[in-house]
Image (cartoon, rainbow, N blue to C red; front, side):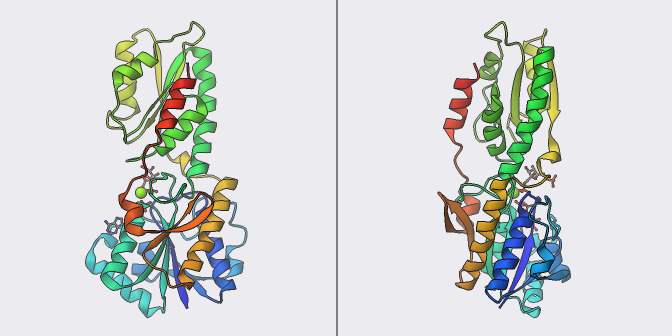
Amino acid sequence: MKIGLITSGGDAPGMNACVRAVVRSAAQNGLEVIGFIRGYEGILDKDYTVLKNENVAQIIQRGGTILKTARSKRFYEREQRSLAAENLRSLGVDSLIAIGGDGTFTGADLLQKEHGFKVVGVPGTIDNDLFGTDYTIGYDTAINTVVEAVDKIRDTALSHDRIFVVEVMGRDAGFIALRSGLAVGAEAILVPETKTDMGRVLKRLEGRRKSKQSAIVVVAEGDEFGGAEDVAKAIREKYTDREVKVTKLGHIQRGGNPSAMDRVLAGFLGVGAVEAVVKGVSGVMVGMQHKNIVHVPLKNAIKHHQDVDDNLLRITEMLSV
Ligand SMILES: Nc1ncnc2c1ncn2[C@@H]1O[C@H](COP(=O)(O)OP(=O)(O)O)[C@@H](O)[C@H]1O
Ligand SMILES: O=P(O)(O)OC[C@H]1O[C@](O)(COP(=O)(O)O)[C@@H](O)[C@@H]1O
Ligand SMILES: [Mg+2]
C-alpha cells in the first residue's frame, strides 16, 4: 500500500510534526509514503519525493512545511482533478492524506466523489474553522504569537494612553480573535460571525476609570464592519481627543516553531490518519474531540462551521472593566 501526502492551503505551525507522524507511523505499518510538493500542484506536476523515517528527522520543531504548500488554481477545474487522479494511480498511490483547511478538504472530497479516490483529511490551518475537531494544527501556536505581540503593543498603549486596533487573521472566522482577545484582556473583540455593534464597541472604550485611558481592540480581518483601519476611523470620529493606532499582525501569525500543544495534536492526528488508511476508511477528516481521535465526514467538517463560543465574548467583556 502506498500513501500520497500533501500539505495544502495556508501553511500552519505543526504541519511538519504531522508529516513526521504520518511517515513514521506508516513505516511501522509497512506502508510507503510519497510526499507531493506544493499541495495539489505537486500531484498535477508529478513532483514528489519518497519519504522515509530519516527524511523527517529534525522537523518536529520547525514551522512552515518541508513539503511546501500552495493555493492551486488548477485543482478547481474538473479536468485537472481527473489528471490528478490519473497521476496518483499511475504512481501506485492508494490513498491520499491531505493536511490543510476547508479548501483542501473541498478539493479532496471532489477527488473522492468524482474518481472514487480514497482520501483522508487532517485539519491543519491557523484559522480553526473546521467543524468536528476541537482544534486544528497551528491554531494554538498562532494565538500564542498574537498574545506575545499584543502584550508588547499593550506596553505602548499604556505608556501613551492610546487605543490600539489590532487586526488578526481570519477571513471568515473569528476564532483567532476570540481566544487571543480573551488572553490579552482586550477591551473589545470584533469577529465576522457576529454583527458588529459599533455603538456598543465605542461605549466600551469610554474609559470608565481614570487610570484606564488605553485600550486594545482586536479585529478579525474578515469582520463585516471592515478592517482595522475602518474600525480606527470610527473610534477617531467619536473620540477626537484620543490617539488611535492600528497594527496588522499579518503573516507573523502563520510562522514560528509549533507550540507543544500543536506538536502533540499533530502526532495524534498524523498517526490517526494512517490508522484510518489502514482500516480502509475514506472521505473523512481525522479530528480530536475531548482527547479522542474521531472521524468526521469531510463535507460536515467543511460545511458546518463551529459555533462561536459566546462564553469567550461574555467572559472577555466581563473581565476587561
Ligand atoms: N471548491 C474547490 N474545488 C476544488 N478544489 C478546491 C476548492 N477549494 C479549495 N480547493 C483546493 O484546495 C486548495 C487549498 O484551499 P485554500 O482555501 O486555499 O486553503 P485551506 O485548505 O487552508 O482552506 C486550493 O488552492 C485548491 O487547490
Ligand atoms: O497567505 P495568504 O494566501 O494571503 O492567505 C491569508 C489567509 O490564510 C490564513 O492565514 C489561513 O487560512 P487557510 O489555512 O484557510 O489558508 C487566513 O487566516 C488568512 O486570511
Ligand atoms: Mg481555509
